[in-house]
Image 1 (cartoon, rainbow, N blue to C red):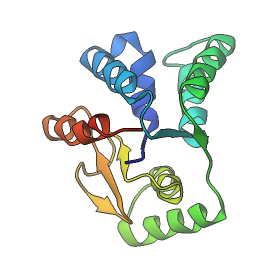
Image 2: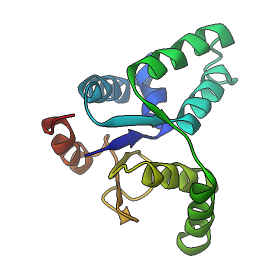
Image 3: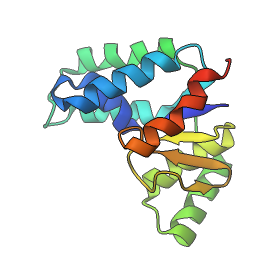
Length: 151
């Protein structure tokens, strides 16, 4: 079953100050290697922006290395025109923020059945994509089938 990660999971994985979420994100990403997991260009772009922003202040060169590490670890997929239309529809009909909707729409367009994110309603399915909050008790259990299935 194909899945992808929202930016927040990637940020927690590289932010050692994120405490238990850092450890959880690292564990989830390690278990995802070799599975049917893709990352979106959007998630990587948002990761770079977050890393180099005022709060984390990672130098651009180091942030680039971190993003490239994810690029080497997972296949990368990008939004297209149909994802844009789906995202706008999700904003109009479901009240989502645009960038959350775009992440969902890109995941949907690339056959992901799960979007791992702390944003949104964990367990909610829209367009065949279920949002799973990996940091909640229920969400962590919902991820297990992703790791038991073959690539």
